Length: 272
Image (cartoon, rainbow, N blue to C red; front, side, top):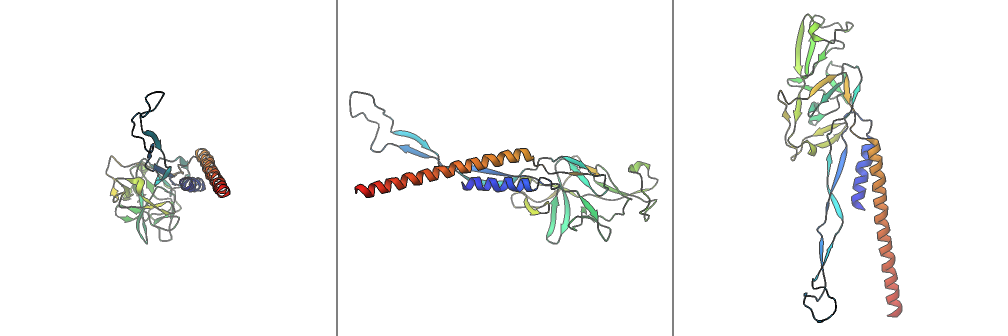
């Protein structure tokens, strides 16, 4: 029953974040307690009666002892792409994480829904600066482009005029300037990253440290799109039904055992 409670908590959290951009679902994994070997008492497998049918094996079989929670890990399967047509939104098509600076240190995210901060920096909606390989990235509205490799470009012909909407194809720009490149990182075991809330993750001893992704391993960066949650609500609802039924079945087993034990105690007391 406790194992099903852990599973239900994970499913409920997944359903609550089905519309959260960049959310990755939690999966509960279980392990079985060691099985018990059942033997007949005072039976060494030797025939004591020379006639009739008998079983010489003293071993009856094995008895399972249920399961317990082994780990709760994050499934980083790719979520569906959602088009926003906003210059401040980016999506990673493939493995990897965006890096952001927080008061608690560097954190990592798959949620590329960004905004333009008061000081002109590209930030998360919580106000954390998005990091390039050279630090926080300062851009101007309507005058920057992020290419598929994560390069952040500006049209230097109109550096200070936010009213001029530049072409989305940097190849058409007369004078272009590469500001920085988005800092994209990976981990040895990303499933063991620790969730921090607001779609942020931090490294753990098991996940290993963040490593800047080299060319050829970097995911494709798509501007104007964001990655949705990878939670399938239909699958999660089915799992929730399965969990509830399993919980109720185990509950009935305990109630039946308690009733039988109570009856046994009462009968022994009556004839004792």
